[in-house]
Image (cartoon, helix red, strand yellow):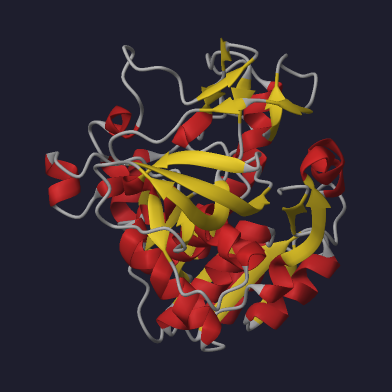
Length: 364
């Protein structure tokens, strides 16, 4: 089968023939129908994260079950499924208490060292990053990383559910526990930020403020449900938020990750409010804090991983909300590409009017 690999850090993606093993244990063979391009995969391709080469990326996967291993109990051939990079064993304390995103043994979703590799190229093992490997015509995935969804949802939209949607909407709904009537600030109106706006609408927030540096992104934010938009290059975003809310927002969500932006998010929230950190540009970035200020204002700062998502509950929920017309996914779709067009797809993501790019052709 064809797959698009990274063979050298910083050298981009190459499409070639690879071999896929037959499913064993609780593995599910998926015919990939759509695979989204996420910046996380681009980061892995450009930076040495300690991941062996060659590597197979692609973690926003949607497709159809083609075969199942002998231990699979949840899926049958023909099921429409979505993959998620939350790797959970289902047996540790975190999993058993509903915190699969904090699983203590994510390696349980992978093959053991004594097993043959799932993916090889000319007999050479290929690293299947996050246990998914969606930049390929087929993917071999542990059933704990797959979710069955309604057959009516189109594959390109379904692919977005496994990462961008659950990360953005989940941060608002799950992590911050946003309630009806709350005020929220979404800093960064890219693909994940737009999903946070989606989540704020679903949660019933009445004041949804989007902050960005690009007017076209802010216009799109309005279509997703933002009640107010602020271009931070043209106005003092903190002052604007305080003027809109009166005393500060209940929550601010930072999808940018620049220290100055993070500090502005902290300044935008009310006493007792929360700042939630999702995006990161510089992994070495730090944020100086005046401790007494946090104590006096009773503000909290929390890092968010994958929107505190329980995939097998949340992904079908968002799929159903989409089919009911209550969760916007169509407007996220900016461009569809072929499997051998990943390099061009990532280049397109630099364009301000491109939100998400999804592989939909060259997969069969």
